[in-house]
Length: 243
Image 1 (cartoon, rainbow, N blue to C red):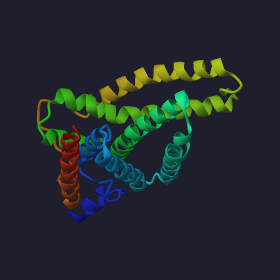
Image 2 (cartoon, rainbow, N blue to C red):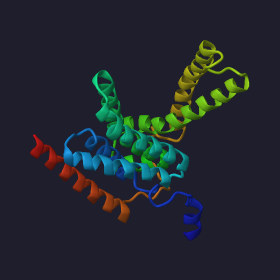
Image 3 (cartoon, rainbow, N blue to C red):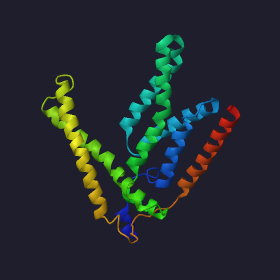
Image 4 (cartoon, rainbow, N blue to C red):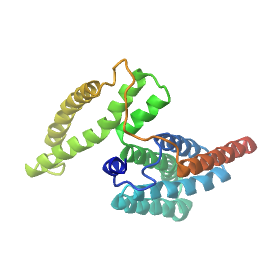
C-alpha cells in the first residue's frame, strides 16, 4: 500500500493539492466579491488580491508572481499619485482601467491557479462523486486540457516564426497570417483529438468508472471553506448596509 502511495505521489505542495471543489469555490468567491463596491469590499479586494498573488508561488510561478506584483504596485501608485492630479478624459480612462483590472485580475489568477494545479483525473473524480451528468463531465474534461494545449501550440508556432525572422515589427501582416491561421487549424484539430481521447478513456461508458485518485476534503480545505463562508457573510453584510 505504501509503495502504491509513493508511486502516485507528485511534486505539488499542500496548497496545490487542495480539493478541486475548494479551488472552484475559491475562484467563484474571489471573482464575485471583487465585483462589489464599498469600503469593506475595498479592504477585501486588497487582501484577496495579495492572497491570489501568493497562490502563484504554490505552483512554482515565481517569475509570473514578480511580474504581476510589480504591475499591481504600479497600478496602486497610479491610483494614489497620478489620478488625483489628472483631469477630464485622462482621469476617467485611468480610473476605468484600474477599476476593471483590479476587479478581474485576482479572479483570473485564482482561475489560472485552479487550471494549473488540478489534474484532470482529480476533477473528473470529483464530478463523478458529486453525481454530475456525463454530458457536463466530458466537455469540462476536454476544456481542462484544451487551454494548456492551445498555449503550448501557440508557443511552438511563435518559435517557428521567430526562427524564420517573421516578427510583428518586420512583417506585421505576415505574422498575423502565419500565426493565426495555423493556430485556428490547430484549435479545431486539438478539440477533436481531446474529445476522442476522452471517449477512449471510457468517459461515455454506461458503467461506473474506477479511479485511483483519492478525493476528499482535508483540514486545509475545511479551513478555507470556513474562511470563504466568513467572506460571504462580510460581503452580504456590507452590501445590505451600503444599500
